[in-house]
Length: 422
Image (tube, rainbow, N blue to C red; front, side, top):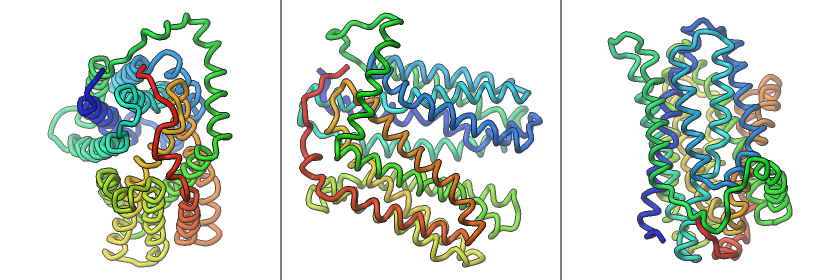
């Protein structure tokens, strides 16, 4: 058995490394494809393909982790990420970048849930009443800070006076994925002695039942159903800013290149704010009387305030307008950071080890469903009204979702069943 402190340190390290490769790619991926001759429509197609692949594979890959174990699935995800990055260094045609996008989508789907599920089960194997909230919060904080640091580094490296500077962050991204793979193989110890690894045919025959059981649990368990509905609201909130803030920044700056730089700074503010929110999540829970439900409601309310600030100041111009965008982003992501760990605690205390990774994938799918609704509806709403109106609608949705976490404290206070580390 592992000491809880050691488990926490390993989970935090893996949570940070999980975002290293991705964060280095964020600032340069579109620019690299443009430099290799792809037009904007083709680049947009790669984003659509990525979303389709992740959405399609979200539940099957979560079920895969529940059937064969978490370490192997996350290691395969890291290997695919590294392979996609290496190919990206040399890619020069549209079909290559689309194929790379498919591989990255598979890697992303595989990475949803295994480390979190492993940590919760490992803690419960040591102490069925062990604290998971602080570890989950620390992991989310580490991931947010790595996203911020990696994004800044990935954007700064191309400024260096070296040949092929635009591809340099991609090289480092591949190395980052390899470091993650090594860390997973070394640190994510699993006890697989109680269940034999299924053969290839048995594995895929068992996946549908695992997925179906996870989906049924997510829909029939009232606590989980509320968590999933809350995640759909989070998806609406996130897409409302990802879709509309770049255009708002472009209006303020009047220049696309300057807007790209400005939006990069705002994105960094969001990542940092999310890390701060996750870091104080445990303290907020104590401030609310040790109530995970009230802590989640507090985080959701702060998220709503961020969107309300964007809505209320959407017509302000000049530097003041830019400052209000940064303030809205900071509030929104601090709120998401506060709510994330306690929402995860509530969810994990409803699930056993056999379905844990699958239910995490159901949660991710719920968030993507909310984002899909935003992507479809908000462009039409903005065309008919304005950006502030769309942000007002998103603020109302996220504020209403706070009510989902009322009276969840009894369900969140103790794990429902002892879990065995896998």
